[in-house]
Amino acid sequence: MSEKYLKVAGVLAILVLFALPHFANSYIVHIGILIYSFGFLSSAWNIVGGFAGQLSLGHALFFGVGAYTSTLMLTRLGISPWIGMLIGGMISAIIALPIGVIVFRYKLRGVFFAIATLCFAEIFRILVSQMRFTGGSEGLLIPIMDSSWINFQFESKLPYYYIAYIMMLLMLSVCYVVKRTKLYYYLFSVKGDEDAASAIGVNANRYKTMAFVISAFFTSFNGTFFAQYYMFIEPETTCAIPVSIDILMRPIIGGLGTLFGPILGSFIMTPLSEIIRKVVGSGMSGVHLLVYGVFLIIICIWMPGGILPYIARTIKTK
Amino acid sequence: MPANIIIEAFVGGLLTGGIYGVIALGLTLIFGILRVINFAHGEFLMIGMYISYFSCTYLGINPYLSLLIVIPVVFVLGVLCEVFLIKPVLNAPEDIQILLTFGLVLVFQNLALLFWTSDLRNLSTPLAFKLIKIWGISLRLTTVIAFLASLLLSLAFYLFIKKTDFGKAIRACSEEREGALFSGLKLNSIYYLTFGIGITLSAIPGALILPNYSVSPFIGLSFTLPCFIIIVLGGLGSAPGALLGGIIVGVAESFGGLLLPGSMQKLVTYILFIAVVCLKPSGLFGAKVRD
Image (tube, rainbow over all chains, first blue to last red; front, side):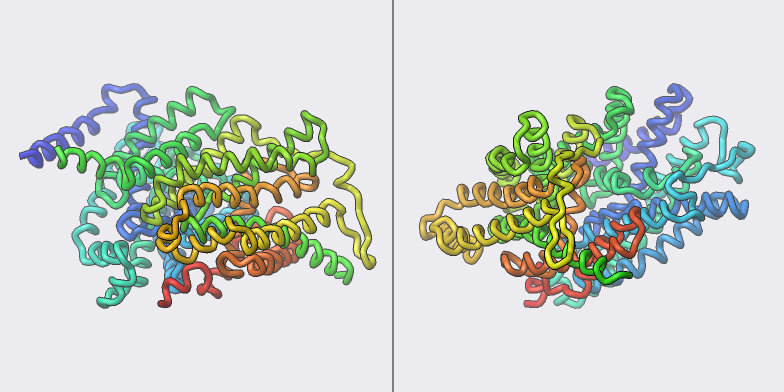
């Protein structure tokens, strides 16, 4: 019975959000775009961070690869960002593969996995900000072109809204599909107890690497979206540590390893951090990270696992 | 490259390494007893540096005297953190513990940013420019003092662990938690005292290096990272291991600094971390994986 209601509510929510930009002002549309892109990113992160239980602190690397690949291809070769997006995803996957193989081959778990991924992302950031080719620390501007789908540039925010929205829904479907594959069950067993899973013949390293590569592939897509939306990329906003924090915070708060947790997290945290940024002004840029930290501590102490599982538990016990 | 530059880089690295060793000692102590990996270790060093900085600039005291303020303040802060934040997650899965201490990182960094802005602050004491010459190598007096103080501190810590009753209780806890509980040790108080001591071991070097370092809210990670490398290199809870690991990291960073331009020097620590955890995986979790 309640499942039926949930489904109806879900379809209603999808329709309402689809129609929203026709009733809302451009600031709300902007917030909506951010919510969806972070929903996308956190869902992608959730494949390795939640499903596989490997807390990656380096997803800014793949986000940055996506942003830089499509932008460089557009500015240097005049190739449409849509193709750049796909190629960026492939490059991210190619980069993620050896990282995953090395990191899991040497049994890096927990905090060591987290820091190793952070190190890879930071190495990438330093290289990008040193190379002339990528525009150094000043970054790259995307030249203004005609407003069209091929150029991935639009005068109004509306197309961006729908692109972000559809990308998030597609990412959600990807996660839904992944959750129904064998891969998910292997990951689930590895997350529960890696030694036990290996003992019954699950190749833990292979599946963790697969999750890492899939996650990297999709994370990269949003890097391209970010570049096309802001028309400007620089190392600090695309591949620095705060980007990784922004990505992983939402699934952890919403519900680690759940399908809708990352989305819920994005619907809570994105408007919140935008409001904070607006209220305190740009002079104090760290305040939203302070709030993230407080949220993290609260979640860890009172509702480990995130808000969604917490709600599910309280409903069940009633 | 002239030989004396290489030797100076080596000795400089050696001295920084000793300081890293003490910081890492606090981290391994906390892990050994509480089984919690403190991601925010470097942040407490940052706090120690700020307290020292402000007590020097506002009270006009000697940088080394500021330890009299740094030690009690940071110790109490550590105890409070343990009681209110770490204790609730002591038996939680490792992920939750990592995320909690990571939350602490964000809170401390950004509180520091909020209160003290992102300005680099340094004590411009004349002391920082004093050089001493030992066998033809010129060294900063402040670095030598910090190194000697770190050695003394590790020695004191070693004696404290080996000779005092409380040290014995700590060792008992790290070896056999339940056994320690049965023999009537109060685990709770051991936990918060240990956390306080571990944190203080991170903050004291912070105050010691302040005369020739600049402090900013984001300085923590550049100390946390070497500490994790040291843990993997030197093994857990061993004071000589921590010192040795510290010296290896310090020397490697110092040579990296010689070879790379300034903006790329941080690469050394990142690459070193990846190399060390991959080449020597028998560190922290290696034993757990193997058995």
